[in-house]
Image (cartoon, rainbow, N blue to C red; front, side):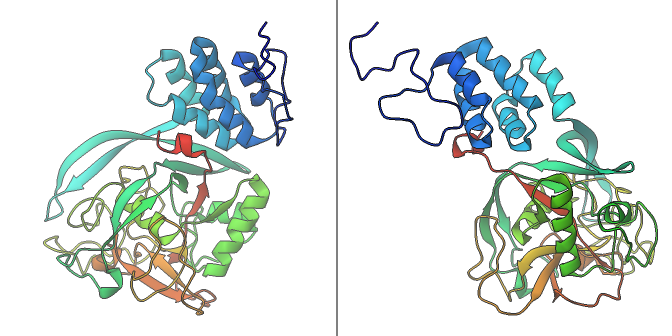
Length: 377
């Protein structure tokens, strides 16, 4: 044993989850110390212990794999970040059980709307059980940096989409689809929609109603649900693309539900359905999100601004510099032209707008707070 009184001894320890370390005490080291901190009731302590666990070889790896069972979504996600790039077979088998994936085709089209590529892809998600067989799938959106707004060369753009600026968005989860009528009914107990159908998106919903849904959903699940910020919405919609649509330079009615009597670019006129259709009827973007173009305008959390001068560049909601309760919507709808369905297109309504028109819906998000040491993984 060391005679140095300041050197930690293997029997010196503090209980996991204690906010401060007593004078002359040391945190229990090695695997026993990691196990102690992983038993803490404090989520942040458990997450910090995961980062240390991998220093201890296979024993530490096993502890991180076990964290995929954790009751906290944040801890599960932190474990996933530590494991996602490893090729160990025993890890891959755990992912499907505790961070399941779904597969899909990512489609791109040429300037006339003709399909030119189709690539298999997958995304991670978690299912939120709303009861009575109703499930809300939340898709993992990896953090990243993108150019928000539209370049001056983009046809149909408006000054509201300027200046074209760089934004960095942290990772979060977003609804796989716009909120459906079945999901709305499971949380709110009613259905305000004009076009009725359990798999149709809920519509005729103002901003305050959408926020109230998020509040009740948060109470029901114990997670903090909210609307996407405008930056999150555009980042999630683009999914790494820079074209007007995540499909490419244009869209057709084989890909999007919109007012196709007025196409975009060189695309032909198409079918005008005159109503909403079941969510997920068309292919998703590269993140695995469906119906980001057309179907229903989607409420975002931000207040409306004339352009992006002074807009935040960290993906957060923009609440400042206006006293008006006018909120942003994105994505276009079944009754709007193709130009309005572009990834950069912006619309706004009063938050309390007495929606009598069936083109306003929304999707939800869940933020994931993880330590900076894990956020770059």
